[in-house]
Length: 273
Image (cartoon, rainbow, N blue to C red; front, top):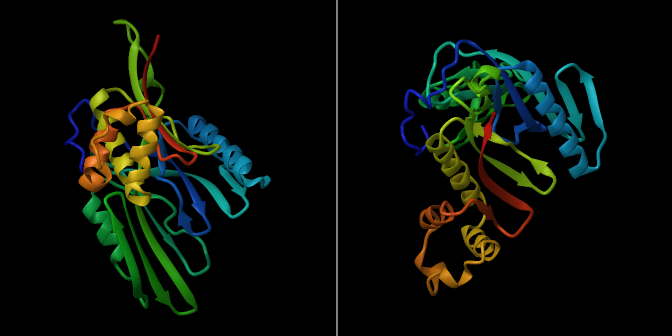
């Protein structure tokens, strides 16, 4: 479970079974958080957008070997139909890469983070655990098997859209939508949409915490302060006084964050009439 507040009845994911899972991989590594969609057409459209964005970044052509699959250089966009047996505040996608380079399962869904982590570490018959890595949002493990190596992965998913009905205003008036969008250079990773501000901000904090941990939090503070014209508001020697957690809390006071490189997150709200 992430460090965000417990989901309320209004914010909790309410799966009734079927989901479309969009996964971007670099070789045998899942590169970005898996995205969940209720509607195949919406998921396919986002898969096409990922392919075009990755193609612009790498200047590689887009290949479409079959429906719901795109290849851009060494990167793949995989759209898979899956089933979630129970509802829950989080959804995790688990994948196992065989020594032949094929995923089996490709994107099985579960709601229990502890179960996902345990599944990753469970050695298959004849496999020997080589290494494992664990973060609040993912778990991976590599295994030695006869004839090569295999890898298990579990990733906390982003629920990008729950289906047309979830984003349709009713007779009471416009529907307020809260979201944020992550981008790196020409590669967008969103937008991620929510029906409540609290749910959006909880998810945003998890995303920002992950990105700050993978990069340099001091770069985030300095570049975000400059972009928002608040350099003079920073305390003297903040880079010695603060830590990563303090930096995340400070960054969340803004709607635009960047680390000075072509990486940025924008928070927004809008409505559907």
